[in-house]
Image (cartoon, rainbow, N blue to C red; front, side, top):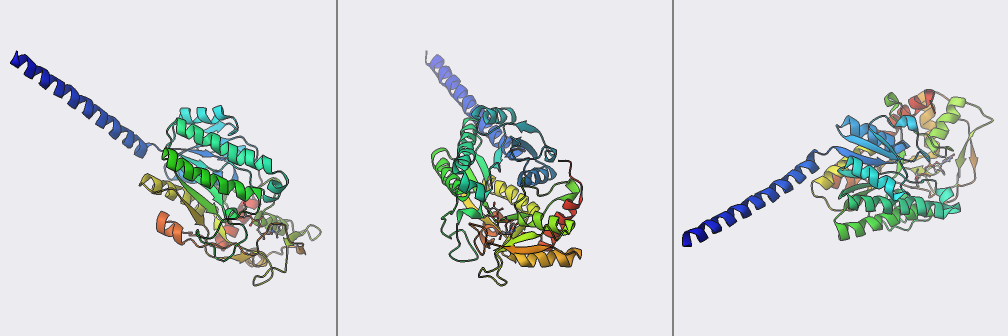
Length: 363
Ligand code: UFG
């Protein structure tokens, strides 16, 4: 009887050990999957920044899956991984994409970005940017995708009270576009507390430049950004259609606004460095992506003249509503925390943008 009891105890111990080692194996396997899973869902992958991010990810050995509804993106920019055509406002679209591809992380770049339009039609922005994000986070939660790199903006700061801006600068967005980015950053913090979803919000300053060899560049419809408009004005060289420079009486070194431009491929690199930071156990945070160097609108005209030996027909116009005089960032935190710093100059940005604008576009 005692013998039988002993055997039963030994048997129970064995079963228990086996169960524990099975669980350990499972956990190890899950961790291994997290490290070897190279699939990243890129929302807005057909857009200007998204397409460069996808190109860069693929080049670095990742599998970027574009999720885009083509409201502003370009079909011919989706060339670096699979495409899911879907809408973040349709919860099932994003859930199905997550189920199908099981990404290790999401890089969320899909959003409306026109400041002026956001003032005229704020609900369009709150619905697309905020509701779309909530749907995306629900799908991530459902499928246990725990890393998010979010495309935030310098617009969260509003009018600078000191410059250069660091991450301790107060955040008082002055338009609905900036509000949506700021609200989403708060949502992400809450999701970390409640669900352990880790995120990095990258506060872009002025993304610019191109990857001309890959046929990628900056084109908005309608075009509203300085560098593409300036290059178009120079390449058309039509003095009856000059570039308008908004404002010449700002408190800057030449009276025109000053901005902090970073090359789009430096920006793409920051996304991967942010993911690496999270995968190494980093905490949720927000970080500026800027160069620490400012260029005024007038200096930009001069750069183009010097680099390409062309005229830029321009005239001064009234100030544009909502434009701060100076938007300049430090990159100290990005360097300390992510190991990122910008590597390309304003000349390189203009060279690449210029080259891309010279090629005929398919779309
Ligand atoms: N500008 C002109 N003429 C134009 C277009 C722009 O003079 O035809 C000026 C603007 O007034 C500004 C500078 O060029 O002084 C840069 O303007 P952009 O429109 O190229 O870029 P913004 O600095 O306005 O926008 C960037 C991002 C936005 C973000 C904003 C605030 O592109 O997404 O910074 O952070 F909201």
